[in-house]
Structure formats: C-alpha cells, structure tokens
Image (tube, rainbow, N blue to C red):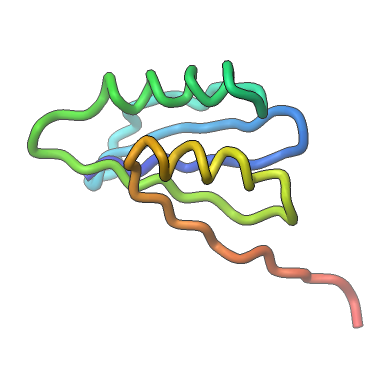
Length: 91
C-alpha cells in the first residue's frame, strides 16, 4: 500500500508518499492548484505504483481550496480520503 498525503493551500499544495511500512517513497514537493499542478501530482504516484500496490491519497478539506483537486483525483480513479476540516477556534 502507498499512502500519499497532501497539504492543501490556496495557491500551492504539498504532497509526499510513504509505504505501508513507513518508508518514504516520495519526498515532499510543491505543486500548483491548477491543471498543470494536478498533472504533475498525477505523474508522481503513478511512477511509484506497482501492480500489487494500491495508492490511497489523503487530505484535509479546507473550505473550497481542495474541490478541484479532489474532483481531478477521483476522475483519475484514485482512492481519495478527505478528512473534514475541523474548526479549532476558541470558544
């Protein structure tokens, strides 16, 4: 199993990947929040994938900054896990 984690931001995102045993497979890299950036991300985990491995992509929802990326990844048939954004504001 390969786990890809994505840190979502407004203009740029960061992604990295580890194996199920915790081995770093892909050092963190920056990609833009646009079609070219999404294609760059798509090329990275595909290079890591082996026939017996699955890829799970995880990210935290951040209002709407992740919407287009999630749609793109789902259209590319990735398993995407979106953690709901948690407002940890003060009471």
